[in-house]
Structures are given as C-alpha cells and as structure tokens.
Amino acid sequence: MRVGVVGAGQGCAPHFQSLQDLQDKLALAWVIGRDAGRLAALELPADTRTSTRLEDLLEDPTVQVVLVLTPPNTHLDIVRRVAGAGKHVLVEKPLEVSLDKAQELVEVCERDGVKLAVMLQHRMREAALALVQLVASGTLGSLVSASASVRWWRPQSYYDEPGRGTLARDGGGVLMTQAIHTLDLLLCLTGMPERVSAMASTSALHHMECEDTVAAVLHYPNGAIGSIDATTAAYPGFPERITLNFTGGSATLEAGEFHAELLDGRTFHAGKRQASGSGANMMAFDHLAHRAVLQDFVAALRTSVEPAVTGRSALQVHRLIAAMMASSGSGATVSIKS
Image (tube, rainbow, N blue to C red; front, side):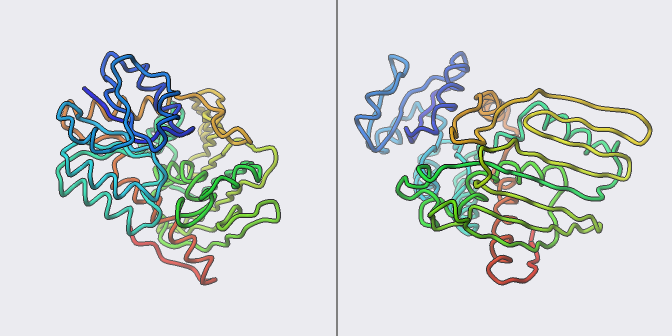
C-alpha cells in the first residue's frame, strides 16, 4: 500500500518512524512540504519522492493513503483535495481549528467515500486499551466520579514560534494542542458529559493569545461528576493522569500504566511507565502508539471495517473543548450536544 505524507515539520518524526517499522506493509511514495531545504534534509527511503506541490501527490494514482501532518488550520483544505482524489486520510489531531470546520472535514470524507482516521494515539496504548475493555465489561460498576489532570510545561520559546498558541493556526492553547489526547481518552472511558462549567486563562508565565490553564467541572447524565485540570504552566511537567471512581472500585491511568482495585479484593494492572512529552522537549516520547494507530488504519482499509479512531469519534472531544471554552467565555454552565 503506497502512502503519501503532507507535512515535514518536527512533529512528523513519530510518523516517519512508524512508517519505517511498517515498511513490509507500507511504501512511502511521497513527502510534500513547503520548504524544499527541509525536504532535502529528510532521511527517506531511496524511492521516496519529495515536492512542494500537493498536486504531484494527488496526481499519482498509485498512492492510496495520505497522512496529513500540517498545522491544524490547513487540514480542511488539504483533506478536501485528498478526499476528492479518492485517497484515504489519516489526519494529525486536532481535526481543525473549530468544531464547525472539524465537522465539515469529517463530512467531506464521508461524502467522497474515503476512510478517515485521526492521530489520537493515547487510545491505542496498552494500558488504555485494557482499561477501556475493563470499564466496558461492567466489572467496575457505575461511574461515580472522574478526573483528568494534564499538568505539562512549555517554555516561552515554544510559543514564540509564529502561529503557535493562536486561534488562527492552532484553534486554541492547552486544550486543543496538549490536553486533547487525555480528554479524548477520558471520553472513551466515561462517555460524554451532558454539561460543563469551565474557566480558562493565560498565566503570567506565557505571552500567547490562547489559554494555557483550564479548570472544569463535568456533569454526567447519571449524576456522576468529573473534573479537568489542564495547563502548560506547571514546571517541569508531570505525567498526565486519569482517575475513575465506580460503585465497584477505582482505576487510575497515569503515564501509560493503569491500576484498578475492586471492593471485592480483585486488582488489575496493565502497561508500563512511559513519557509523553510533558516537559520542555515536546518530542520526548516513543512512537509505538502512533504506529498502532497507523497499523490499525491499514488493517481497516484492507478489511473494509472502521478504524479504531474514526473522524466521527474524534468529534466528541472537539465538542467537549468547544463547550469548555464557551463556558469560560460566558461564565455559565454549557450543555453539550453529542
């Protein structure tokens, strides 16, 4: 299966590593980027072609899959053209800079009959998969409360890059760029809350347009309550953490490892400690979860089933983030439409 990649920035590294690991299933045919010098500096397979023109990739009938790894505000336009050429799409998170554009992106792929997957790779970690299965089995009982904590650190130099942390390019700050992974996984475990109350602000540590600190309370349909604590102003950066309390016990997922204790004495454990880029080096994590998302997408294309991380499922975290920011802006509790 021949693959094209659109984007050649720093964040592409785990994608290229994943493609290298899966070279028995995937052939990297094209890499498209804006900077010819950066493209020339990439270490690519000998038969991979590079270009600054997206048209070169789109006009190659042998390319079946395209990875869109460009800034969020470019996704809709690129995906519209890729889907129009009949090629399947895996897009880096977030889908787009706003909920409306994210919904349109998903609808474009559905209309053109191509499959869409989203790089929300925390879902594919070993511990996350095990915990989702445990929760879905009903073994833990009904949800009582939940919390998600993403206490990361980014230096000012990170936000000095043009466009970073702006509404125009990124669509938001800590929620859309960092916490989105943990929030997406939280929703996979708890389902969507029916309303949210949130406050978002920019701390004195950063000069940026969008939020770097958010606190929120989630209200679930069954009466359970959740909390969210997200920031990139917590030096030197700490592992993200999800804690779930149920009628039958509790479960904690932190830094790629989960542990559950039940009232009846049973315990469950899966995964191992791993970094996730919570500190100044945003690329300080391994690429195995990225590889798992890509491998699953390839399997979905070969068997005509849906990928594990569909565009429709990714819209849920966009709805939550939009509601949180709307609540912060209005000072009122906001209902969430699923």
